[in-house]
Amino acid sequence: MNDPAALFALGSTVTLGMGVTAVATLKGWHEWLELKRAEIDTPRRRRSPRGAELADLRERIKRLEAIANGSA
Picture 1: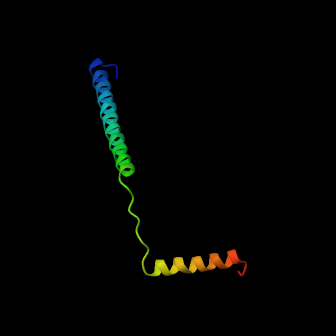
Picture 2: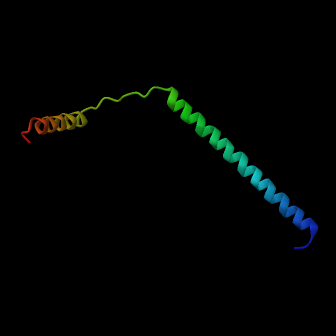
Picture 3: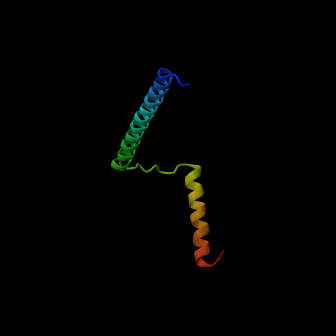
């Protein structure tokens, strides 16, 4: 492995690989930041509970009210 051409080829390959990895990482970071900015800028829509979810919430409220009134 003392051949200068082989060392040059290996060094070039490693340098190119590191460069490609860095560019890909920075691109991913940029896209992730854009995603987070979009999440902050758009208001969240609240989904109203339906059916069984609504009945479950009502039952939980009744239990919490009973606990608050001391008749648990």
